[in-house]
Image 1 (cartoon, rainbow, N blue to C red):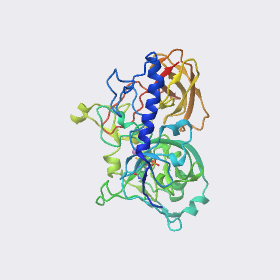
Image 2 (image 1 turned 135 degrees about the horizontal axis):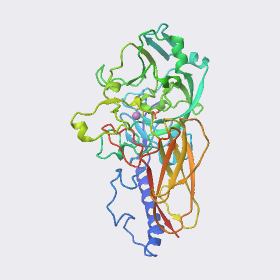
Image 3 (image 1 turned 45 degrees about the vertical axis):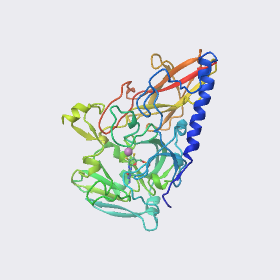
Length: 434
Ligand SMILES: Nc1nc2c(c(=O)[nH]1)N[C@H]1C(S)=C(S)[C@@H](COP(=O)(O)O)O[C@H]1N2
Ligand SMILES: [Mo]
């Protein structure tokens, strides 16, 4: 398989955007202004324009980027090509399971495996094990498998919302996806290889490489989990995603699934598992993916500058509860007196979503949405809320979810230098005509 990209006529994408805008103007503003169609203005003309991907009242849902096509993928929004970072377009989040070809992609390093010979490939369990292993793909298929539906979300999902802005991939909300993962429980592999006493962590490494010097983060991407972390009970080494082999760019032939935790731990192309007798000090554990050791991982630029901030690996957190309005997306007006379905997904790394509420007045009053099928505590939960606008105008929809631990989304953004853990209440402006 070759990793090459095809740019999907960005001009067409642009003209589609301006078309949408024009029809919104003609239908929406015309009606709002009592039939007076004011060309060449935008609905925001009377206000300061929101910054392009910034934290305005209605930021773009995804980042603003071209659509590109990679192998096994539908057109996705490309943030960067080396390493590859591709964001899933908004419309794919109307369902609880994200289709494999639409699933987002994120790599740190730029040399990716683009063909793996399964006859030669082995999963190596090495280091402080009683019985080190070299398992073939066939060996893995013979072991008892398990499935779990779980959300894979990049720690930096929605990073473009941070103010002040922070470096890193400027994701909108599309650095996430939910799939049914099938594979071997991590615990079953550990029972086969048996970590010796003194083992403190299990380290995972894949086949991707960088051009940096050996020993640096720019050469290898490795992540480790504590041997006594309860999440190990639920981890899988998955070889299937939505009942198909993993797409190459999502970790073929084997990836770690860490339910409830951010995707940085979900190692792709896993080929080495090491029993470590000392805490992993590699760049990706000791320097990167660390968050302030505060209850919600938030701090201030001043405290960072003053060197006051103690950090912990982001694995100390489970993914905070989130919910997203996927439709309506503001591209077309709603109609007075006509029932509109507000739809989207919610999830939490801390236990099942028990409530999703929708507001049509920017968060002053809330109504309870109907929840879709329950696919497990770590899965997307779809929701639908019917709203019949009574008068023309501009409205701000908002959505907030509550999980079974009682966690509710805050209406205030957090800040940390990595741009992690965003879960502020999402809003969507809509125009009602009629
Ligand atoms: N081998 C490998 N695994 C990896 C990474 C990587 O760079 N290399 N990135 C991690 C991060 S930070 C994310 S967000 C997820 C993205 O998973 P996806 O590309 O399947 O969507 O992969 C994780 N696993
Ligand atoms: Mo990530």
